[in-house]
Length: 189
Image (tube, rainbow, N blue to C red; front, side, top):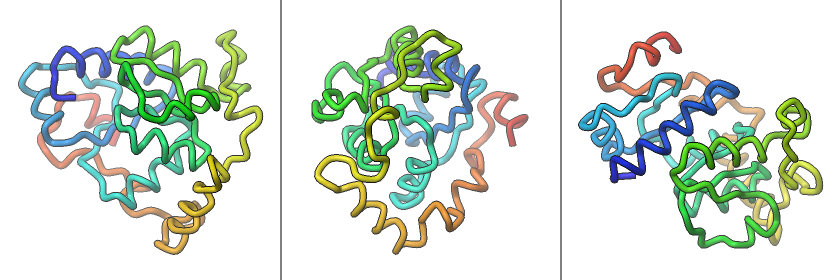
């Protein structure tokens, strides 16, 4: 996400998606610098400072859909039973694609919007005349491949991050502590 053109495409896709769904975006400081240096638009997006691993895992579990350029996050999403869209042109975890739990979209805004539409639940996909993600049709939400989802869920539970226990950084989702990037960020708090 250090390349301005790539980040611009991803942000445009996320801004379009924010018209249907709330978009929460923890950004690495390097990505924030690229956004600020290049005047990239983030209105409609809820920007967060980077999260700890456990808070990030809590956010992943709470999401209805995950969009990421991280290979680790793609796999964690599958383990947690959350559909995902990969914001890259290639993927290490081909099994997530084969299972119908993940889609490749790259940094093209149109492909991002199409992939998100595909990954919505059946009820959310119906008005858009899209097929829902297979993950919503035939995937046991917490099992994932080879049962790793259950282990991750147990690890989160023992860390105090079960969905039954509020996650301090997420449920109060504070916007980035740096200077506001756009007025829209202030209005969402």
